[in-house]
Length: 494
Image (tube, rainbow, N blue to C red):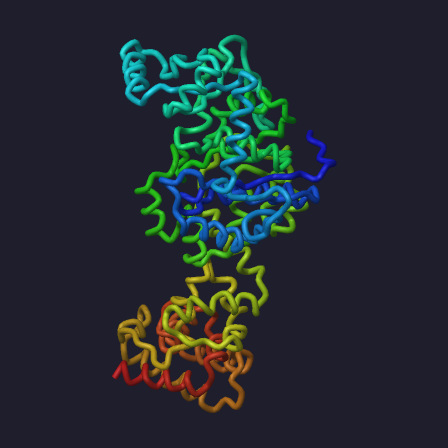
């Protein structure tokens, strides 16, 4: 077990090249939880040196996504901190300095190989069925000769000089020791010909300078771990604890989500992108709960967690390296749990924008009244439009056939509505407890079932065959509107 007695310094270091997805959200969440649990520091670092793939809107989406999820960072863009700047595009000179240090110490070298030369080497290796690797053409060029060529204007990159003998052993907290023979590792490029450092160097330099204690990141970086550890050891820096999280698989459990499958999920009201989940009516509490349990568990039975619960109970020792299938049914389940856990006022505030987008003008007061009868039935916030839109319509419309209950004819249904109208008209108070007894009595004397009678009334009052509890809904709608809608239903059946 890992005893965490020191405050952890962790970082979430996304590249703003596209939409913020669940994998990024989970990485940010686990880093945040470890920082909060240990009284440590959670850093946001923007890795934006890939200028070809950089998307300005993606950076804003990252900030908004973190804020929506409730994941607040301590140091980073917009907040500052003593180890900034926190955008890699503003740290070019820092990386150049450390790359030159590696060259001076003999752990890196200047490489002048042209793209044409490298292409020919690759072709020959493919023809000989060898693994693709740098052929070492420039490995042993003396530094002074290399610098003379640089002054003369030759283009170059800086490569790491990987040892060709022995092995590299690295430790991953989830997977234990991983040993790789050095001869299968490549002389990877650290600095491109345009002077920009690649992730392999930049991230290691930043982690050292920002005093990162734990590197929690996606499993796609596992193959690069030996290289990263070689770089860290070349500088003689302390080694952080590396934790490579489990892979997300598509719902079938076979492979990653493709673009087509992601589009299909969206048609079904699901998504792997945080921005979409917000727009689809998911609550951040439900998304956080669901995401946390894809790769971590507290015990074999506890499932409901608030963000504060997770801060208290999270442990890197309970992370699971096994691939985690994305289960949207579980997302709906957790979302429902957390919607039911909201206060009436909080739920009212959250559903209001969805109703307004649909063209309604609900008051918070009315929404607070209907919140208790919506909670048990709302899978997502945007379902409020279909489920509760009738509260805010001046007129409702539906086909006359919807008023005809199974086993009854038009005349019988019309007569039942007339009798219901008379019962309700004479009531001095229009509350559930006052309305329900006389209408139950009517059902008993009618010879029909409650399902038939109240089904007709439900359509007349709400325009829907499925709605929140009928009598509570009628109380909120009010006597005048209810009687008017019943009157319209009777006319429709004529």
